[in-house]
Image (tube, rainbow, N blue to C red):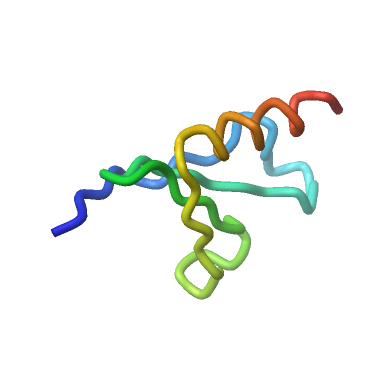
Length: 62
């Protein structure tokens, strides 16, 4: 059985009308990422730990 943590919203996501909102959570196999605006209806992307680290590295370039 896969263990999940609670969804955590990106600190760059705020309530100022910004459209780029991301949530992530840990799983036994790595991480999951989804669009926070869509909530439970959002597609969920399963990422390995190294893929998630790469995503964060690229996203931090903004």
